[in-house]
Amino acid sequence: MSSSLIDTWLVLPAAGIGSRMQADRPKQYLSMTVKGVTKTVIEFTLDHLLSYPYFKHSNIASAGFYKAIVVVTKGDPYWQEISTARGYDKHERILVVYGGSERCYSVLNALIAISQFENSEKKKDSDPSWVAVHDVARPCLSYHDLDALFSAVEDYPDGGILAAPVRDTMKRGGITESTSMTKSKVCSVIDHTVNREQLWHALTPQMFPLNSLLDNLQVALADGFEVTDEASAMEYGGAKPKLVDGRSDNLKITRPEDLTLAEFYLNNF
Image (cartoon, rainbow, N blue to C red; front, side, top):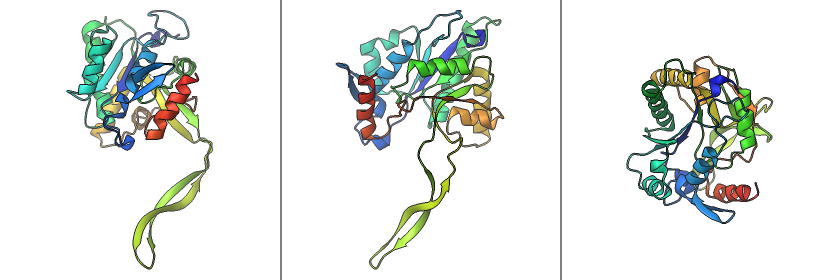
C-alpha cells in the first residue's frame, strides 16, 4: 500500500430522508435482520466498514479507514438514540458532522471538517490524506471490492470509484402527451436506444485525495455545476477517475423491495 493511502477517511452521508421508501423514518434507520442480528441499515454499514482491517503505517494491501465521518441532520433523534445505545458517541474513530440541504453539501461539510481536524492535529510533514465517500444505504459492500478499490487508486492522483458495467439494454426516454377519447395525459416514451458499450453504473465508495476532492467540489458548486456524485466534481475539474469493476449486489436501498433484497444478500454472504 502506498504511503499516500495511509490515512483514508470514510465519509457516510446520512442526512437524507429517503422519501421513495414510503416509510415512517429515513431509510438508514429502517431495521434489517441478518444472521439473527437485528440492526438498522446505518449500523450494518458503519459496523461493517469500521471492521475493515485498519493498520496504520503498514504496507499491507488493505489499509482500512482511519476515521469515519457520519453526516446527519442536526437534532436527528434516530441517530441520537442509536449513537447513545451503541456507544458511537464515544467511539474514538467516529466523528459526527451536520449535513447540508443536499448530499453534495453534506459531503462538503465533512471534507471541511476533516481538513480542519488535520490542520489542528496532524504534523505538517505527514502524508496527504484520502477520503472515501460511501452511501450509507449500501450495506452490502464487500471487502474484496474495497481491496480492489484501494489497490486501483494506489499512486493514482485522480482517484477512482467502484462501478458496474451496464448489462441491460438502455433506453433514453422522452415525454409525450397521450390523448384518448376521454382524457389526455403526459407519459414517458422511448426516444432512442443508448449504446451500452463502456456505460457503467456508478457505485460507492468513491475515493480521492482529500485536498483534490475538496477543491474541485468547492469550485463546481461555486460555478453552479450540478454535482451528482463526488466523481462528477472531480471530472468537472479535469480529473479522470478510474472505474473499478465492483459487485452488482452492492445495491443502494432506495425502494421498499431493496430492503428485503439487501437482507437476502447479507444473509448469504
